[in-house]
Image (tube, rainbow over all chains, first blue to last red; front, side):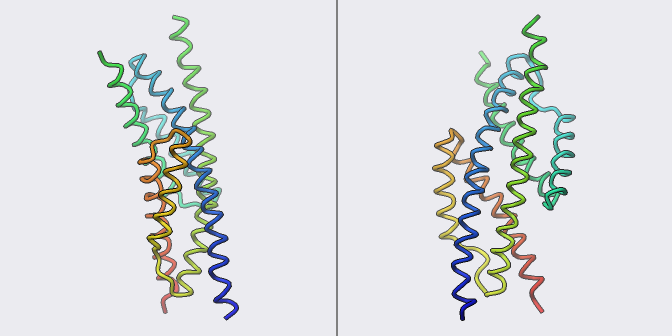
Length: 101
Length: 101
């Protein structure tokens, strides 16, 4: 019974940590998108292609290695980067369209 | 011409920041999944349902508000949380299956 009573308290405790991590993730993502916004602006202004497959290949390899080091599924790290990149390309396309006469 | 030469240097600089943010994201995600692994274990062990729609509703509302505060698209914050939750449910299902006789 003591164990059963303990569960909601522990669950609440873990959820507080999850909420803290989520706030950190959102704030870091906000800063990351500021960076990619500037990249998009530079690329659109100077006629550089929106995507760079060699850079993406390096990013995926690096993140997979970091994932392994932190005991995270490397396949998830790749999925995660692709998810972020899809959003970035969406932003870049919008930025490029805004610069068109 | 000076401006043109300046682009690759600035691009490199921004990409270094992006790489730093990505490392931070991966490490925070690794810690977050440790939390949800424990949540999954508690839930599976005590026969609690894998999903909790009220908790998810609160999380989405909170993250959207944090996104607005940090000038991030709230729709993206919701998509991001759903992306993470899908991975968590996948982990929980696996954990639950491991506990079955």
